[in-house]
Amino acid sequence: MIIFELACARGHRFEGWFASATDFDRQVETELVRCPVCDDAKVARLPSARVRGAAKKRAAKRSAPPEAPAAAQTTDAMAGLPAELVRKLREVVHNTENVGRRFPEEARKIHYEEVPARPIRGQASHEEAKSLQDEGIEFASLPPFLTRDIH
Image (spheres, rainbow, N blue to C red):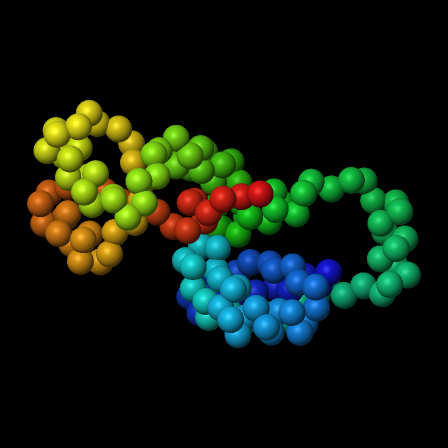
């Protein structure tokens, strides 16, 4: 595995793990590599100071204590927020009902008291979001790093 330091066009920095440099290039070309904060697909490699020879790497592996899973180490820090805050925010999001593309319809039903109030999340186009705002329906957009499933 190769770990690359990456940044999106908006300046968010994060790490990516790839099988090879060729694999990284292929994933960038097909827009599979995306910023975990803003979901931007314009991602570039940054210079990295993490260079280790194979012998040093094997010796370090033998003497190093077991590490936490890579996802736990990097995903929380990727947002540029304290890890505990990101975990709490994800917990809040996890406790909402994902209504998907029905979000505008469900938000209206809740706002106009046609159904009992409940915490929901989902997707809305820019036009749908503008329409909800015009009707006085309050909602907030969530950054992708809060809604993406973490494995």
